[in-house]
Amino acid sequence: MNSAKIIEKNSVPSEAFLVHGMPDVGLVGVIAASHLITEYKMVEMAYMDSESLPPVAVLHEGLPYAPIRVFGNGSLLITISEMAIPADSIQLFMRTLLDWGQSKNPKLTISISGMPVQNRQDIEKPKVYGVASNAALLKMLEDKGIEVLREGYLVGPQALILRYCAEKNLPAIAFLAQSFFNYPDPEAAAEALKEFANVTGKKIDVTTLLAKGEEIRLRARDIMKRTQQEMTKMKKGQEYDLPLYV
Amino acid sequence: MENKKKKQSIYDMIKEYLDEVERLKEGIPTIERPSWDLQACTLEPLSSIFVTPKEVIITADLPYVQPHSVKVESINSDRLEITAEMKRKVKFKEMGMVHHEGEFSSFSCQTRIPVAVDMQHLKTNFKRGVLEIRIPRKRSYKIPAK
Image: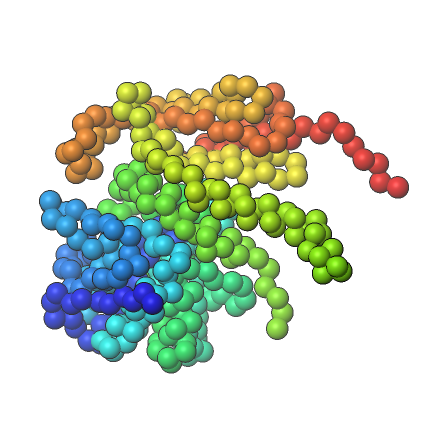
């Protein structure tokens, strides 16, 4: 049976906001997480090791790193993946990240992701929806002026994070910004980050993110393409489905 | 005997056929190619194709592109070529890659259209850096409803 574990390189703070930015539609989570890491000059705290990971090392400044890492500072922890997550390992990886996260007693677990819309080209300012692991957090989102998704399907990392957190009674929310399905969407990431700031009280400047929009879209093409292949295996298109009334 | 007959239903046959195709696909070694062509100085854009009952919609993500340079040409009845010049040349070095040399000045890709379409009535729209091409489907016959 395959396993995964988180190896800590630095002392990891507890009671921090734990943010997950995993590859998904529009790479919204990855782009948002990457911006937070750069803006707050965060350092690598931990990384994932697993025989289920492809044989990949990511090179930065000539040094090899694991593709799934945790960055942090005193009050914020961010998990990010620099490669598409294999669909058949996503349950293992998310469960591992959540179990490890639980040991750090986070103040709130926050997923940032996209919500695919077919007319994205016509949308000037993508809307951000919220979902939560319990009713009190749903009310908090509404009190902050964030529209809550009432019915529908979620597929992918944020779906598992919410389900696991609900099982364990851990506080978790997710921001889902309207986005392109399979094109990197920095504008959607910027809107998601504005709501992240609204909820956490953190100051985030998205000016540089928007200014670098075209560069991000160019550089993120290959990871987007591989993410799309994995999303197809996960049946991501189910998010378009009409929900059954139960 | 009855069980055997059930197994041979059209649905089972299709499923068996698709399973076989999947098995064959897994057995065929494929070599991945990069999303760029150094000789032509082009990048392959991300693109998608949707087939609806009335039309075929093709989109392509074209960052850094000058809208007036976008060209859509039909190569034959079922193949389209998209090309677009970039506002500036992009070098590998800018992306921190020193093990490749070269630069890119345009996007280029060809898309195969899986159904019969009327290329004469192709319409394009370029917005938010994304090209959208809509081509009506050809209707060669009609089955009257009784």
